[in-house]
Length: 588
Image (cartoon, rainbow, N blue to C red; front, side, top):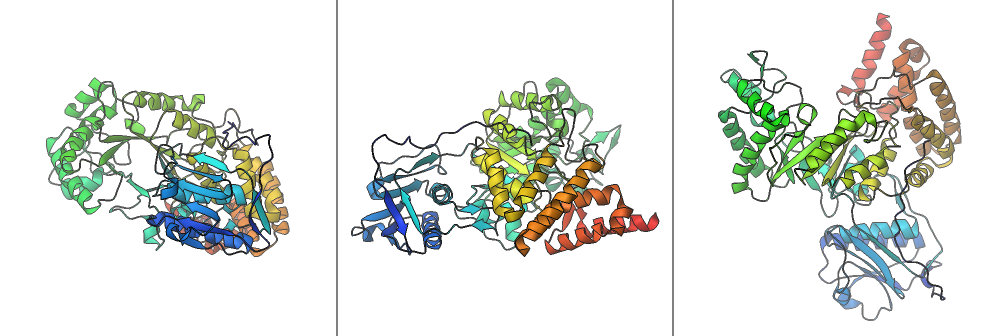
């Protein structure tokens, strides 16, 4: 495995040279401590305090009572959770999500913002001081201890990235997004629905920031509704207005009026979103009419006409919705910034990295144009959101060797002062190459890009794969080492890519046999099988007949059904993939 770029982040206090008191939090199933909340604690602070008591009880076997501040005068040993009158002089940095925890002699204080900060402080205290781990929504590690002592406690943190979207399916579940500090969601459907709401999964305490990042031209000016009577509303390509795979004719004043009217209705019907996107459709056919191209030529980029149009809409919408933000994509043909046009104060630029080589950092020569555009947009606006891509969308199951670059890329984006990052992944279902590990690492990096990534990866693999971890880590390293100086891994890389050698497949197969044999229980064995799907999928794609005859496709079908992996690519259901390969073998 390549060496990760590591930058140390020092949090805490140096141990004084004089002798320190040791305070006993619990011992032999007993404790003298009580958890104290303010008499007017917020709902999230109450939740955080209950989480703390429940986990402390489970770890120690003792009972940590939860009481309000008005009832705490007789208690000598306290853990204060959240804001309270006696600690009103304590300040925390920057945002509601910031927190600090520390001790005042024997008493412990965990304090942060009332909405999410204190909650994040509690989760961090349990993780850093007591070894609790939240690996997925269903897998957590709660170490049992007979005794815990402390002398000096101090930790203070604030988020590096304001809005953090890890767009894996499991991260839409509050029980994992809250401890991993994933504070935002990309709203999926049109009209908006949150995936966790569709599946009956509750929101995290403190809520999410919700972003409607959607290809929305057809939402607000539907081609099926308008084209037959008004083809002039849509893209002119080679002298003909396009009905299929079209964009809007942005210079047409009627288009602006229709869009503003429909966006107004949309915002009123969906008032709880952070950003409403007025974004191009997902194709490469911007309008080539004379009026549109006048602005394009003047601004030297297709983003010129796009921003000219969105600015007008945002200015009109601001009168009724002064607190709302309206986004637009800098995506594919619109990624290059305009020469003179500037986004209005209520317009956000959603810059997309879709063309990049994800086996190398953004600073690599393969990705230079993306960084050039990032820097250019940064000179004309401070409201930039990044839409990044972290998996193979054509083949969810395929090995995707990009873990080495995630930290570097997020640091680059942070240093360019982006407001938020959406790490688009597999939001359709659990599954995909190392999906649980990726979600875990991405969430931690968006909160703090300077973590020791290799330590975090090792910690996760050891906790998630148990006695099989040695072989899974060896396979993980083998995948990352597939990258060469000349490799180019896109979100559409195919199974026949030269990095996937027969040697890699054979050696990986042997590692998975060892990992399966080492698994201590069915749960670990099943996780090993899911990790092997990448190698099985390579075998199936490269030599379907041999793979099917040897039972590889049957094994893929068994695992994906058991794990409820419904999609094997962004547009392909599992049943369709299986049918494709069975039909292919019959034809051959």
